[in-house]
Structure formats: structure tokens, C-alpha cells
Image (tube, rainbow, N blue to C red; front, top):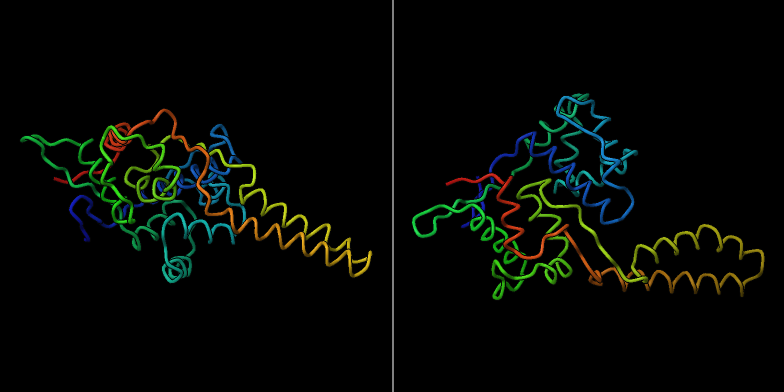
Length: 255
């Protein structure tokens, strides 16, 4: 069992693994604006394993491997050992196997003026995760707006912070500039697959011009991938107090 001042890491449960997978999938596709919440598929531990992959919109073994490792924070060796075992038929089979290789966060329940307070403890846990990531938390108070932080450190809110209480945060809405890397990267791929081959028949000059345009698209995509989103919203959440109260509703605490 690992611990810090505000967060204790304990062995994960199958239920936690399932919640994390479904929540990380929901937030990832919501961020990408590819699937709506109405398309969610109900999943329980007793569901067939294929139902979980359908619910997460993972329809290929390569996608399952890549996204599952990323969403659950598994190493290559842990993933290899997990899938190398007996055949898994149900969601429970999979989640139990993964849970044996994971930990889950438990928030230390702090006392204030002689009384414990879950929202305040959740707030300290969020601050701790931000600080561990190198974020300046000097001016982060319960009344502080989350707008700036979510734009600059979206990965922290969708990752470690969301995993304090998976499934509790509203689906993220991300507004990006027109030149966002997703659009440029997609354009570069289509350009390479369609237009570049067609240019071969028009001589060396046309081919070199197409390769130059492709290079410019790739450079633009690389240069824009670190840009902060123009706006990030988690439903009606406005402040760290709102966030902490919401997390406190579902997070696990330990006195």
C-alpha cells in the first residue's frame, strides 16, 4: 500500500477497473466529439467481454491493447501477462485479472475544526495531484475557477483527478482552434494516401510539390499538438469547490 499525505494507493477492485475503463472511454470520445452519450451501452461485470469493447467503441484488437493500457496506466509487461493467461469470457474475468496489477486511490479523510469534511479532503487531494505534476498551486483555493487549469492541464483532469471518482465528472467539452492537430493530422493522412500517389503520374515536380505540402501539414500538426484548447467545460462545474463536492460524492475515503 502506497500513500502520500492526502491520497492512499490500495489494491484495485474489479469494480474500479470497470468504472475507469468506461469513464476514460466516455471522456476520450467526448473530447474527440465522435460519439454522443446517447450511444452508451450498459455494462456490468457479468456482461460478455465483447460488450465492454463495444461500450468503449474499441472494435479492433490493436485499439483494445493501445487504449486499455493508456486508460488504465498499465505497463507493456503487465498487459502482456494479463492477456497471456486463461481465456477471458466475461467483463469480470478481465477486470479481476487487471485489478491484480493495479492500485486505486483512496482519499485521506481530513478533520477541520474537529469534524471530518469529505469535500475539503477531496479538494486537498486534487491540489496534491496538481502539485505532484509540477503545477503551481499557490493561488488554487476552493473558490478558484477551474477554467484556466483545465485548459492548461486537461490531461490531469481527465486522468489522475477523474480517477479519484471515475464516472462522476460530466462529459468534457473541448473547443479547439481550427488549426487543431486532429484536423491537420487527418488532412495529412488523406493527402498522403490519395493525392500523393496521384501526383506521381504528373512528373517529378508535381510529386515534390505534393511531398512539400505534406511536410508542411505534418510540421503544422506537430507544432499545434501542444496548444491549449480554446475552451474546456465539464458541464456546469465552475470552481474547485464544485469539483471537490462532486468528487466527494463517489470517491473512496479512509480516516
